[in-house]
Image (cartoon, rainbow, N blue to C red):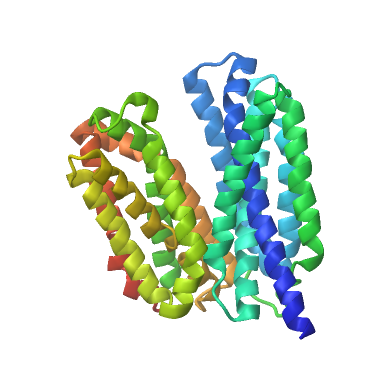
Length: 378
C-alpha cells in the first residue's frame, strides 16, 4: 500500500514538472517584443537570436541522455528546473545581442534537459503504476503553457516590469520543482553499460515520426493564420483562431488520451490518431466554408494529441538501446522538426504556394499511420 501511495505522489510530482516546464516556456513568448525594443535590433537579428533557444535545447538533449543513463532522471530534472528559473530573469537583464543569445542558449539548454528528463521520469512512473499516464502529463505541459502566457500577460498589463514579472514567474517554477523534488523516483544505471549508442531500429522510426509531428505543430503555429487569411476564410484580426482551436483540441485529446489507450492500446490509438490528423488536413484543404475549415484544425489537434506521448512511451520501453538515449534521440528529433517546420513550409510555399505547402504537411502526416506497424517492432 505504501509503495502505491509513494508512486501516486511521484505521478503528482511528474505532473508538476510538466506544468512548470510549459509555464516557463510560455513566460518567454510575451517578452520577445520587449527584448527586441531594448536591444534596438531588426527582425532578421531577432530571428537569429530566437534560434539560440532551440539550438541550446537540441545541444543539451544528447548530453542529458548520457547523464540520465548514469545518474537517473531526478538530478537532471532538478538541474533543468532550477536552471530555467535562474536564466528566465537573465533574459531581461541582457543589453547586447551577444549576451541575449548566450542567455537564450542557457535557457534553452535547461529546458531541453528538463524535457528529456521529465519524459524519462514519466515512463518510469508509468511502469511503476502499470498504467498509461503520458498523455495526461503532456496535457499538463499545455495547461502550464496557457497559465504561463496568461500570467505574463496579466503581469505586463498591470504595468509590472518585464524583469520583475520574470522573477515572479521564476519563483513559481522553482517552487513547483521544489515541491516535486522529494517525490521524484531515484533511478540510475546500476550495471555497466554504454553511455552512447547510435540510434537504430525502432528508435530511428520513432525519431522520424517525432520529427514529423513536431514539424507539423511548428508549421501550424507560424502559418495557419496566413492560410486562413489568404484564402479569405477569416479576417486578419481573427487569423489566430485556427491555431487556437488546434491547441484546445490537442489539450482535450491528451486529457482523455490515457483512458483511450487503457481501453484500446497504444497501437490502435496511434493508428486512429494518425488517420484523424490526416483527415483534418483533408477537411481543411478541401473545404470552401469557414466552419468546415476550422473543424479541420480541431481534427488535426485531436489526431496529433496522443502521437508524441505514445512515441515517447515507446522510446522509453523499447529494448534496442538504453531508454534515456532513445528518449533523448526522439526529443532531439522532435525539437529539430519544430525548428525546421516554419522554414520548410516557407520554402515549399515559395515554389508551390501556401496551400501546396499544407498538402506537403498532410503527406508527411501520412507517415504516422503508414509506419504504425514498424514502430511497434522492437
